[in-house]
Length: 134
Figure: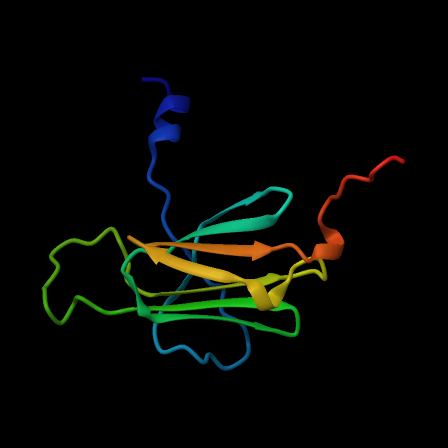
């Protein structure tokens, strides 16, 4: 196996959120969830990986044109005593700036097996339309 092939097989760790000089408002370690974003003529769809997150521990809101995702993961350390760990536990937090072309009042969300699907419909004025020729 070449070094290039080995690199492609390496596990990628979760990316912790960089701390700032300000005071943290989260109790535990927070990570940036990985996302995939696709677009079609009707909407932008965002898929976020949130392993270990339940619907009750997930908060999604839009404020001042910014979509906020904050998720808390319940600790398993109290239940189990790890002797070796490659996967750190912690919550997730991510923000996305939304433009005026998103109909923020029509955003929908679904959480299924640790994958959050957010559908961000485009505002009618920004959807492509066919011009009728008379």
